Image (cartoon, rainbow, N blue to C red; front, side, top):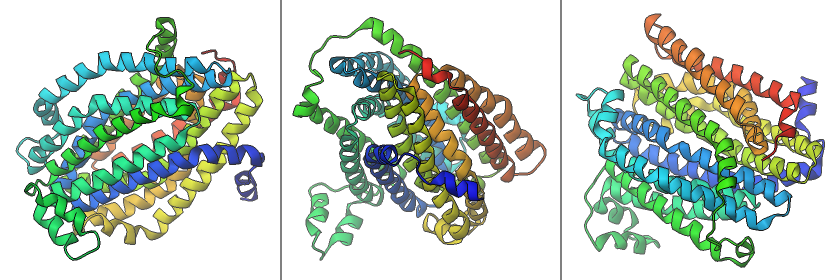
Amino acid sequence: MLGIFKFLFPKDKNLFKKVFILATPVIISNISRVSMGIIDMAMIGHLGGSAIAAVGMSGMVTWTVISLGIAFRTGTQTFVSRRLGQKKYDQCSLAMRNIHVFALLIGLPITLICYFYTIPIMSFFLDSSTDAFNLSIDYAKYGFLGTYFVYVMFIFQGFYTGIEETKIHMKTTLSANILNIYLNVGLIFGADAVLQFFNGSIFEIFGNLWSIYYFPELGVKGAAIGTFIAIIWQCIHYSLYLFKEEIIRYKVFDFTIDLEMLKKQLIVAYPIAFQETLVMFSITIFYKIIGIIGITQLAATQVIFKIMHTSFMPAIGVGQACATLVGKYLGEENPEKAESSIKESLRGSFLIMGSVGIIFMCFSEYIVPLFTNDQLVITYAIPGLKFVGILQFVDAICFTLWFAMTGAGDTKIPAIVDVVSHWILFVPACYISGIYLGYGFWGPWISFGMHLTFFSIFLFVRFKKGKWKTIKV
C-alpha cells in the first residue's frame, strides 16, 4: 500500500507540471464535452427508457464509423509532435494537410453511404418493432451526416495538440458545447419550453431568439440536430485559428502535400483505424447482447457509460499530452525523457481516474438518479457503476500507455492485440455468460472487466520492454 502512495507522488516535478500544462486545456474541453453529454442524457432521460436506449445504441453505431477519425488524429499528431521536436516546423502543417486530403477522399463516401443506409444498419442492432428502433433512426441519421466533419475536427485536434497549442482545442470545444446545449434545450423540448424557462430572467434575450421562428418539440431528433450544428461550428472555429500569427508560422497556407510522408502517416494510422473500427463494433455487439437481455438493462448500460465519461475523458487529456511529449522528445532524440513523461502521465491518470472511481463506488446511489427517473433502470445502474469504479485503476493504465505508444508510432502490435482480445475474449464471453449461461446484465460487464485487465497488462509489458523508443516516423 505504501508503495502505491509513493508511486503517486511525482518523481520529476517539472515534467509532471509540463504534462498538466499541456493536458489541462484538453481536460477542460473533455470535461466540457462530458458535461454536455450528461446534460443531454438528463434531458433525454425525461423522455423515457426507450429514448435512452435509442440514443445509446445509435450513438454506439455511429461512433463505430466516426472512430476512424481517431486514426486521422493519430496520423496527424504523431508526425506533428515528432517534427516539432526536430524543429521542422513547416512539416507540421504538411502532416495535417496530408491527412485532410485523405480524409476528404475517404470521409465523404462513408458519410453518404451510412446516411442513406441508416435504416438497414440500425435494424441489425435493434428490433424494428420497438419504439427504441424508431427513435434511433432519427438520432443515427444526423450522427452519420456529421461523420466527415468529425473527421475534420479530429485532424485539427491532432495538429493543435501536436504543436502544444491545446488551449485552441479547449476554446473550440467549449464554444461548440455551449451552442449544443442551447440548441438541444429548444430542439428537444420545443420553443415554448425555452421561452417559458427564460421568461422574466436576465437571460430572457436567449429565450426570445426562439420566438423568431416556431420550433416544435422534436425529442430525440432535436438532440441529434443540435449536435450536428455544433459539430459544423467547431470545424469553422478550428479553421479560424489558422489565421493566428503563432499558427501561420507553421506555413499552414502552403497548399502542397507530400505523398511520401502521407504513406508513412498511413502506416502509423491504419492500425488505429483497424483497431478503433473493430473495437467499437465489438462494443456495439456488447450493446446488442445487453439489448437482447432487455431494454431496461440496455438503458442502464447507456447511463453507466455516460457517467464513465467523467473519469476517462480527463484521462484522455493526460494521454494526449503524453503522446505529444513522447513524440517531441523522441524527435529530440531523448528517449529517457520520453519514458519519464510516460511515468509522470501514469501518475496523473491514476490520480484522476482513481479519485473518480472512489466517488463512483461510494456515491452511485446519488449519482445515477440524476440521469434517469426510471426505477428499474436505476436498480441495474447503481451496482453497475460501483463495478465500473473498481475498473478505473485498470483503465488508467490502458488509456495512458495506449496514447504513449501511439505518440511513439508503435501502433501495429497494440492494435492487433486489442482487436484479438475484443473478438476472441470479450465478445464470446459476453454472449456465453450473458445469454447462454443466463447471467444476464452482469455477464457482459464482467467480460468487459476481464478484457480491460488483460489489455492493461499487455501494454505495461510492452512499455517496459522499450522497443517503442527506436521507432522512426
